[in-house]
Image (cartoon, rainbow, N blue to C red; front, side, top):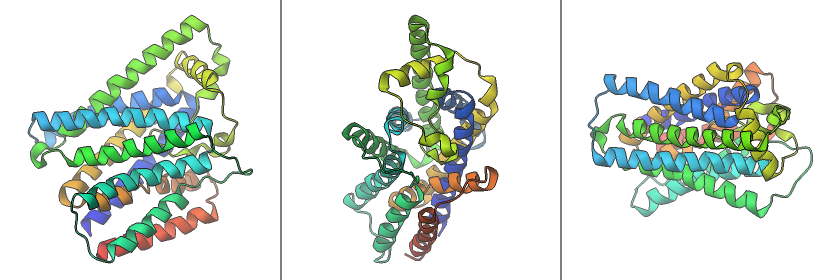
Amino acid sequence: MLTVVLGLGGALVYGAADFLGGLAARRISALRVTALGALSGVVLLVVGTLLVPGRWSPEAVLWGGISGVTGAAAIALLYACLAIGPMSILSPLTAVTSAIVPLTWGLVTGTELGAIAYPAFGLALVAVVLVGFVPAKEAVRPTLAGLIMATVSGVLIGAFYILVDQTPDDSGLVPLVANRTVNATIMITLIVVLAVIAGRRHVRAADAPLAVLDGAHGAPHALGAEAAAPAPSRDGLLRASAAALRGGWRGGFWLAVGCGVLDALANVVVLVGLRVGDLTIVSVLTALYPAGTILLAAIVLRERIARLQWVGLVLALAASAMLAAA
């Protein structure tokens, strides 16, 4: 029961982080949101290590650091595939892949669950697809590149759970500090590179809106109608992102910081869930993170929740109840 609560709790906090990240990305750029989020997360987790003692070991730092690399790569691929579109297919594809990878790993490595858990997993995966569904007025066939990037992004997100699950139980928050430090370093380096590109190409700041993609964890729901805009070309996206990095930080600074704090808090919840529970259950339920985003978007922004998304939410609750009883 506790594992189910932590899995769902992690999903809701991740969703809230994405909501703030989406709002922040409207004001600055998605890359800046990710970088600020990583930095604020590092600060929170470092403070957390003072309150929650943990042993600094090579294993904890290594697995945490590798998960930071996979996380940064997952975010980059996610932004790229969502820019290509269509989000209505690629977003749920990423989410369900991120659940299938650790689920498969857990089953292959010998995880034993009750008979009711297996249909619950199937129900949960259907819920992930429906909750992550982004309604589109016109059906657009995804490109092979978009499908590949969405799938690889989901694999890397799933790998994060597997890697964190390998960390020693006595390491406390150390693996997450290593994760965020590596992630922040990569994203800041990317920002510097793009800023240099912007300077050399003399990109106009007017192109900056093209860099607005979505939040830090990959849920585009908080962007509303803006997410349905035509995707820019790869070169145009690079130029636009670089242009956005040359603008001000003030508009979405605190939203991005809040996004990072919530994302780090969600990581802590997931880490606790992995320590006290099972990788398969935690990862599948955490993949329902778009639920938190669409609920907040409905409450705060008055965005309409699609019927299929409501069905997904109901199925998610049913699957959670089944897993709690397993």
